[in-house]
Structure formats: C-alpha cells, structure tokens
Length: 191
Image 1 (cartoon, rainbow, N blue to C red):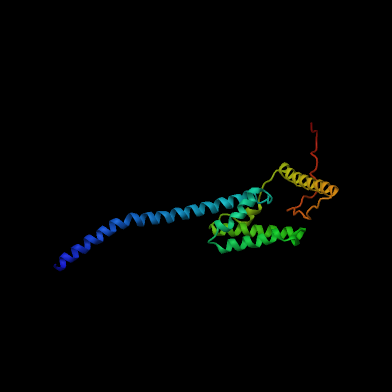
Image 2: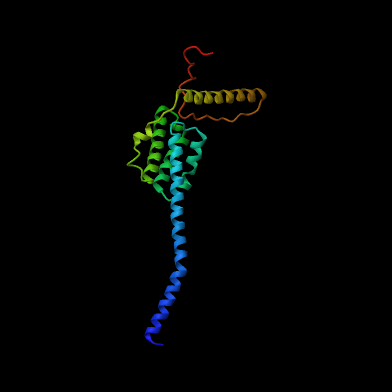
C-alpha cells in the first residue's frame, strides 16, 4: 500500500466517522440548548410569580414559588443564599415586630433582586420596580378579613377544646404583615 492509498483510506474513514458523528453531536448540542431554554423559562416563571405576589406574601402561589427556588436555581449559589436569608427571617419569631417586618421585607427584596441579577435583567428591572405595586383596597380588606376570620375560628375552636377538656396546641400565628385592625366599613350608601 502506497502512501497515497493510506491517505485515501484515512480520508474515507474520517469522512464516514464525521458523517456518523454529526447527527449525534447536533442532537447533543440541541439538547443542551433546549435544557438551558427550559431552565431559563422556569426561572422567569418563578420570578413572575414572586413579582405578581410580592405584596401578598401569604398567597399559596407565593409559597409554591419560594419552595421551588432550590431546584430552579440549583446552579446559582447567590440566589440560594438570598433564599436562605429570607427563609430564616420568615421563620424566626423574633421578627414578629414592626422592625422585624421591615427586615423580612428587605430580605424578600434581596431575594427578588438576586433572581433578577441571575437572569441578567438588572439593567431592565430595578429595586424601585420591585417596590412599585398595585393592590386595590378591596383586595387588602378581603385578605385582612380572611386573616381575622381565621384567627376568630381558631379561638372559637380553642375555647371549644378547653370546654371539652381536650388539649389545644400552643401556636402563635405569624401574621405577616399583621393587619392593622379589622377592615373599615365602606363609606356611603351600601345596600
């Protein structure tokens, strides 16, 4: 076999390997791109939920989004650290005071801003944007009423348990943020 024959055989083998490997490499690259797209979409969805409910911290959607942070941002230690700091603040009863509520709010904003930064949106979404929200008074009143109704129901159950001699667990409800009092009745003629 001459040198030119050996080169021809090597060229044929290389061409066959390239033709066979190209679709596999293309699928692998496509899979990586699709995974990055899916990851980013999940992260954007989580940010959307947190932004939508940023002044309704007791909403179930907000809880679901918070509980997904460790998996959705598994590759981002800064976001996970901000989530850990917020988690500590919302679970520490020492923060059940006006100053504590402010610290919780700050930790929540830090978390949202860390997510915004991780998504590369910090030049488009500022902390002022995070602070700006709209919630109609009727929604705020309904939420406060629901909280007070839940507290009243709990106290009624507690009284019933005590009356029957059944132990009732000592539980101090964390109301975050606490309602300032019962909702004010609407003004004007209500029929």
